[in-house]
Image (cartoon, rainbow, N blue to C red):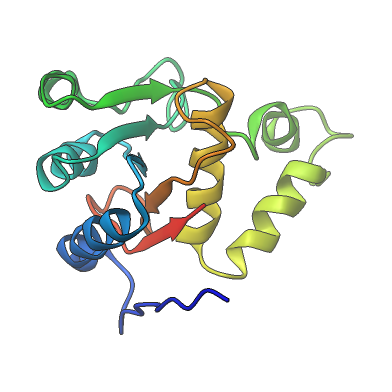
Length: 174
């Protein structure tokens, strides 16, 4: 039997970031977890993570290029360099639960719009536990797909609620 504790915040959002990092560092130490995967659109939260978690290997997962605007990378080069200098990794890729399914559903092909498929169903189901939970699972899968983490080792995955809030409020051992 394994006992553990959960930490719940009164409100979601970026205001919980420092507490998330504190809990992550404590739990990673208890479990001997080396790898932390974190979602970061612009790199602001990713940079905070590498600074707050110097004992961990921090893997920053970004939005894909063109996620919000065609041919635009939201991730700021001003954040990339210090993340890399502090030992972090940055990975940009198509979202596991989105990809071509989302592109078709949101595209201009009339017979495909509003057609939900497996990726959408998985994402929607995970969102029942919170937006951060969905993103935590998704970015861990993205890191594994890229070979940045092993699937037979635990990682801690960190994400936030909302868009571009510059912080996090969810962390999960996976």
